[in-house]
Length: 83
Image: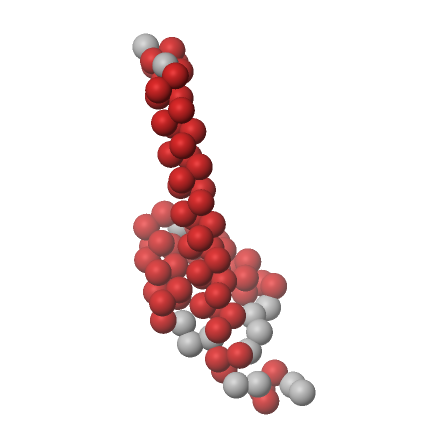
């Protein structure tokens, strides 16, 4: 079975493809817009699943950063650094 006999929506993405998408999704505003577009409307199942997993990763990182900031704020560590 070769690459051309696989339907477009199931074709695997190469390692360089994943690497390129990860760089694309890391760009602050444009990457987030591309991430939303790929997660909701990509024809390729592998591309759609990768975008969805990267979106979940982004949400988890934001929540952890918010939690760390909240702990630092309520314990007075922010005032000690900036005050």
